[in-house]
Image (cartoon, rainbow, N blue to C red; front, side):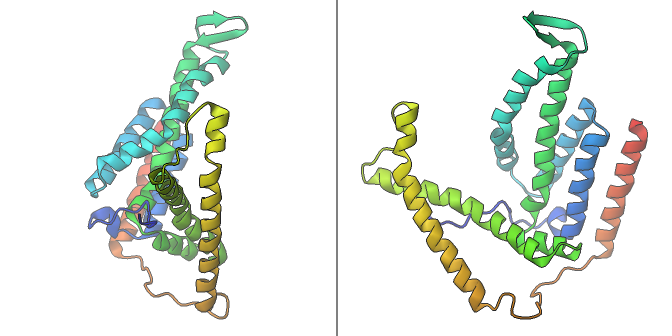
Length: 254
């Protein structure tokens, strides 16, 4: 099994061709609108527009659905618990000091939808841009290189750690070892052999990464870029359109 995992989906599309800084600006503007124009119909519309933009760029629906499914437990938790902490609105159900109100239901729905929109907007640049070019865009915007390198390594190797865990678990199951069975305490203990193997493999991986960075002379002199990024006329136009639309939405929501 390969450990090469990435959020990025390689395609040839209008969104993939945009400069990473434009996509970062669009994601930032959308995230700001989630708080400045926090109304449920707008958030639903923003989620749909973002999902359609990704689909028009060749991102399969399965990727968007997997993001939604990953957030589903968190979304359900918000919908179940948050309504009981709103004190305003008409009371629907009261259990002791706890009250379920109409404002509570609307507020919980708003928070749940906002969480999903924020996740989709934050992942939009990563789905349509290689990780190294995303970080290069951040560095071009003023992010220190060492911070950018740290983010790049995290984006690259955190998914690999998950793939490594699954690979070790499947390898041990093929040898007759069953992890994750029994009650919760026995179930947790059964994962210890898998975790030990993953920790050892992760240490070896970090050692190889350190040696490869040392061989390439990291920190020994001025850096150069193999494939630089440049803002084109279409990128400036797209950035301007995003700014105008975001400003118009804020003005209309006042």
